[in-house]
Image (spheres, rainbow, N blue to C red):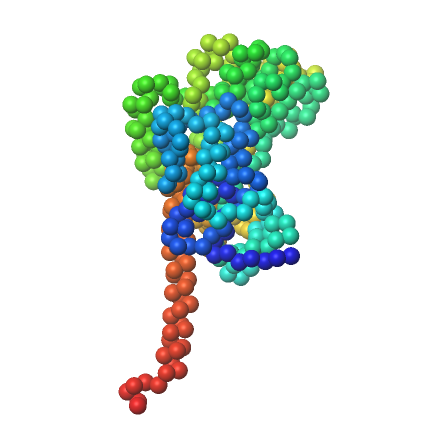
Length: 380
């Protein structure tokens, strides 16, 4: 069993982890990124085939490397994955892929990370493992008739995975709306779930190109934890759900999607049942019911809630532990590929300041001890 010490260990090689490593390197700080996948960007390549980002390419680039496409284009998931892989190579970021972290603990002043047969120690650890981790489905899902093909959105790629017959898409956030619209072209489609608002413009239309700079400003400077509106928005997003973005109610209605805001609450005779008692006779169910964050591998008191306790990514009560890539870490922008740069830069700056302070605290006593050993010139 080998042990390696690193000044700062970053767990997760998505956009949040990469941009944090970039800013640490710019400050001359040593770091190492551990990524579970064999290729950087695979987390994006595993998304459904038709996925496209909700922000234009000019707002999706990480510092130092533009996306190789028109600024008004909307990157696909595969294009985003390839871009992140190219970014890591271009910036020569220190990364090890295929390394799955099993446990994070703390020994005295250092953190200890167990990854298979390897052990890493670090003065600082940045958890950048993201939120797209534990697919959430209702407890009653296994009670559905075995003849119904069901899958979570994390496993959905395209309509060919479904068997012939109607489909129920559960969850009316942006992924649910996108998938329901795609499936409606080949089969009768039900979409169940409350819609939590929608962007009032076509994000790919000409008017959006004019107003998007203003929208970006609001996301970055208005909807933050510094003001009541931002704090209210954060609670809504974390606990209620995200609004429709590319797909709108009108798009769903025009495509013949049967939308109901009644929740799926159980199973009746093997079929999904809505809160109003309606039983849907479907051959497929796609659960767009979100994800939970897996923190079971963090053997530290990070908080009792659904999300770790932190202030702008700095863990509460655990010096040297940081989080990036969480929803609304500091503002709405934290959930956007291009917005995460601000969070990564802030954490890198905090780490740099902490490291310099620790080294100064160690060096000063040594200088004092040396001075005590040297004879005073006044006594000579």
